[in-house]
Length: 130
Image (cartoon, rainbow, N blue to C red; front, top):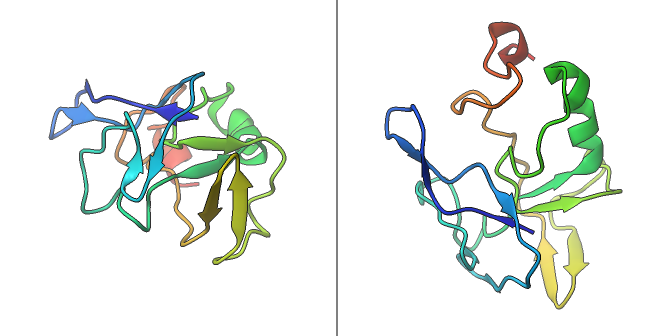
């Protein structure tokens, strides 16, 4: 599970909560998101239909050659990384049990690499075009 308090970065607002960090203790999942996960842009993130952002290990593996290095878990803003799930066949409405919580897929969301300075050259024009 990955959560994040805000940190200062060089963007127009000067702050972000996207770079999540792994926690080893249980985290409460509520209708607005995860306890301890600070969300700055509530218009586009969090809330009942975006409470948890899930990403998959195969998608991370796809990014590794694109970036020239393995991205750090949490770098795309995901709260939960599924190690074996392939994202392409996942369907809207599909449900996944995680501990005592059932998560339902509401929509697909691409990582926000355009707006945030990700590591390993991800803001290079050639990378953004992909």
